[in-house]
Image (cartoon, rainbow, N blue to C red):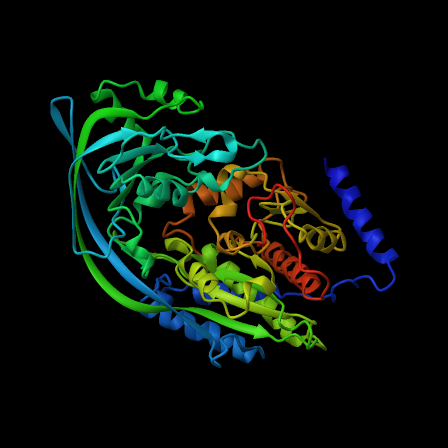
Length: 530
């Protein structure tokens, strides 16, 4: 496979050089590993308090980013002459009790141990009484795959229980139907009032339940007025607790789990009912995307825009004490777009197209900053060339490749392969599609709006490292540090890999900013430019 990909890259490189007037190689630039590390150390410091939206940590972060963009010579990204885009947020801090009547008795679930989640309804009190539990398989309705988990079942006023992940619609990747957003919409349209997602490690993209539980008791930002379109209660529950519940109700969880993988699955009334009581404190505030630009030099093309995104926010202070520093997630990606912006601003001449940098807010709460920008763009989405996302840089050593979830979906593949070939590297499809990376980063909101995207992930094949290096580093980070207070700056980081990650991101964006037809989605892609 490596030889095949290398041959494709070589062919692209030869074809490009053989065409008179074809695109020239990107300028040879160097991103300083020390500069990246300095940004990360600042943003992940205790002074910034975990960079939670609506806190002093946001004020410090926004000021730091805007000042850095200004110091690097970038123009304000907002047409009003500022470096910010205001994002209206309601913060909801919920306390949830969940009690289930089943098998002639009751089960009282404890938050953090037995469930995570709450209510995104902007109300001080939400009560759901005696809501019947209905197992709806994956909770997916996918007409093009001939799949309907609901089968006309009546779930009005009920609580749906569903599995994370999805059936094997495609062997090479997951689809939009794997997102909780889809399951939420299907439940709402059918009148359900609440949902329980069954947490299984692999089906949750390898994210442990502890990453969900760590947010119990903390404030959840929701985008206004979108908060009105929410279920009354949404929980994530460990599979062990669900097994116990099903057994008490007289059902075989494993048998129903297996049945849910078939098209003929029909919803199952569990013979149990749940009472939810949610008490919430609310506050409304304005958060901010930080936006800067390098304006294109060509009057005909400067209305076209290449966008870089990285979310600046993280999880703030932990309810149990400590700070979620978010060093890799995502002070590192934010550092990358700062240094890529510096390189663009320092070029002898700007590219023909405009390059826009957006450090987004509230990604951790559902891609809210990106969602708001897409609804209120500064440049028409029809003239947005691509959105390139950086989230969690490679600090574990140089790699032979970069992973791009959704590779093959659009014509920006050409820029990706060529930029890699010129560096003697490869671009590969996502090797861990179960991580659901395509749907969990800001680029997804642009894809949903029809803009081709690339989320540039750490590569898979590490240079000069043992075969288990990835599992011992990246795997250990996801299992132990992701969304934990332990996501801090480490002395053993290899920032050379991080710098190469950012340099590759620059090279792809530079090529897309040179002109030519707007990249289009390829046949069969989930999202097509309208």
